[in-house]
Length: 411
Image 1 (spheres, rainbow, N blue to C red):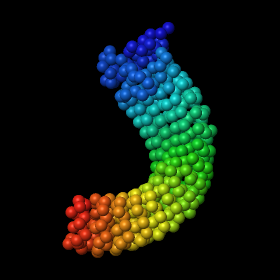
Image 2 (cartoon, helix red, strand yellow; image 1 turned 45 degrees about the horizontal axis):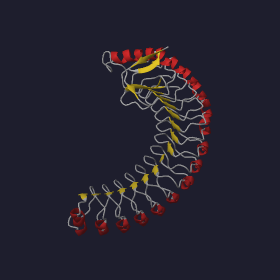
Image 3 (cartoon, one colour; image 1 turned 180 degrees about the vertical axis):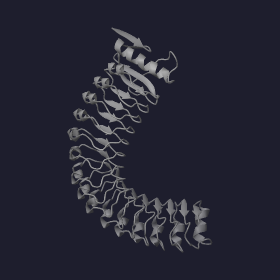
């Protein structure tokens, strides 16, 4: 038998489930009395609430930010669902009937108050994406290891201390986000996930990384920032497909592995908030690097090889102990943003006059008494910050040229 809901022909069991959801939404003020759950077309649902159907069956359901503290068991009657989004409610648990949604591909349960996920989740053999960020999970169900088609597992900002040991069986996983949890160590099985392209294990309590991290050779993004790492494995250099981001910031690193030279495709490197006293000459091999952040360290000098980073557009070196800069800095022909504030610089190299694309130069809080006049010839400079130095430039002709051209100067 079939019936219809909001003008859409559906089985009676699905109509019954939608009517129960409708009553919940009305009770919480997210639908008017007698107003049905909105119908949409395709899997994409505009707004926070709605459903879409194909071939007389509901295939997508969105109940976002509706202040619900529970879902009805009848949701399991929507057995053709491919996408379910319950983001931003106040759910503390999910019904076991969720395991009946055997065609589910994408499940979004971010920003709730979930303390656990049901074991029946393991029935969702077609599930490709599981999103459970910003909850109160302290474990993941062991049955998750049965989700052979899972590609995305996101459980950022929870209370996890461990993950199922059999997670390594999920060989199709491409993206894992387990940042902002309470991991002290990670299971060895994690390094079996050789299809991974993105791995976020930041904001935990990790003191070491396994050498086996080098087995994740397809990674394009790795975030291990905000941990307690004192060293990095040499195998980091085996991640030659790291293209987008490498976050090593907010750890306790005093040195970088020589193998870093192999990351020739990397575009963004964050080394800030560590205990580095120098950067290795090998950093000059990162030919694709566009942004380098190494602020809040204890750097006393910079390698000449830094000048080989000819793709670099942003260089952030604030809050270090730099007393001088290499002449090769002037070879960074694409540099647009140079932040040198709060160091111990007594002079700037004349080679900075070659940085014709420089837009922003911040040298405040150093020990500068003068600047090279060639800075006045930088054609694209829009902001120059000289505060908290003792630079006597008020009448400098080159400074007047910059101001007349529209450059903002802070003295």
